[in-house]
Image (cartoon, rainbow, N blue to C red; front, top):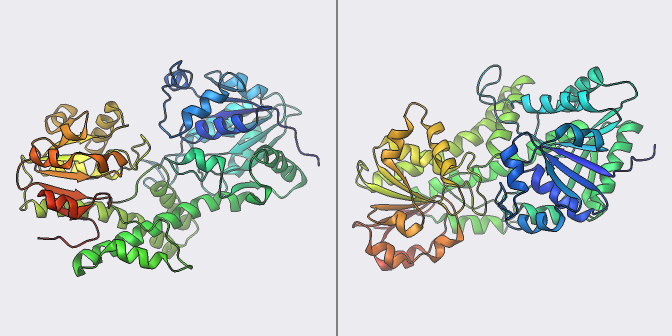
Length: 471
């Protein structure tokens, strides 16, 4: 079968995946009209803002939107119109971990995926290629196809593809411009392969064809979960070794450097930290755990669950180390937490290690100052309230202060905790910080960011993850 010619693309969901991905498609494919739709009017208004104050902070994203918006890139709340006009529809909605019901705590909540699928079936008056862009459990495409076929109009055909994203927040635009691979899964039927070829033709405008991998539908769905699970496993592994380093006197940086020289291992994702976060790693591993349990593979489920448990242990271990170092009590002591995003170069706070640390400090009745250069204050309050649902927001605000600079956050503090590896924390006037802190002044580096010896010369007591405490 000949591939479908793609002239118009609709993306349902204007979040961290759909927005940047389809904005780059619009830049690289000026002959294709790309419309990104969302029911959240405030989000769409931000994408359309005259001053380009976009709802997502991602280096390079503003330049991409400036180039294509109004030319062949559009943002709209008119979901039905975009669906009806599109040849190809990306479904890029949120798939959070279920909080209740069957599979709570591990299974993916596919409510938004099903809603989007039913909307497509209701609105479409012509055949469409529907592409899973959200991270979903294995065989979700089968459920989507069943819904579409049961509700489709006469002469409407739907072909389902899986096209998982492999973006890293903070480098998403460069990842999209120069991807390691683009993965497209389809049914291995003539119709499925023709639909796959149509999507291949879109990416082939800028991605070398040898990097566009076409596989079976179920393999594509599982590959996304597997990739994130393997990366998270590496982080938990190096973090487990960091605990041994602290106990034995070894240096985790030196250990990781030595390991990374082994060509079978390589150097990536071997940097110890206070723990991984973000929208994907924990959620996808738990999804894999649920899938393993559903397939009656308890040993496999237990193996992958341990990756998440090690990550939680690393956060608890770090917060305990802060308490232990500060003479076994932080009650009424002021602690500056530098960084609230789960990693540098993003405003995303999902599963951020900082949230867990601050919750632990709150439970010890500490006073906490927070500074992050990108996370909006309202998001910080929301996250802290969700982390401590039994504590009223007014009570949280009595313990927590959000500051407008790192220097302000560190003033009159007993300790500084580096929770996010923002580069600006390297350039802080640490001598001024020391001058304005209570003594002894402590720094706890949870991201292997600062020069510990330089800070010690200033007068700080420095504790670095993966290294023994220096007297």
